[in-house]
Length: 70
Image (cartoon, rainbow, N blue to C red; front, side):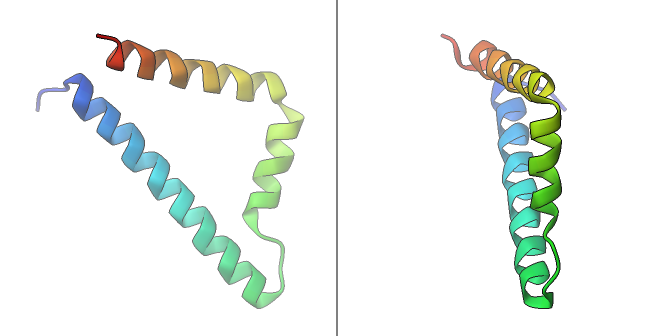
């Protein structure tokens, strides 16, 4: 398999959409049961480590910028 920039971008997008779908599914199930959704834990984790979240966003931006820059 040849990893071209288009393939890597597609994998990142697919993973992001998959994670978002699973979080929304878990949240709707948790709300139906009356328990706390996992997204509350994700929000708490992001608030606890703001620099780590910033670094993650910068790395994703650098990868996308590297792949999409003409």
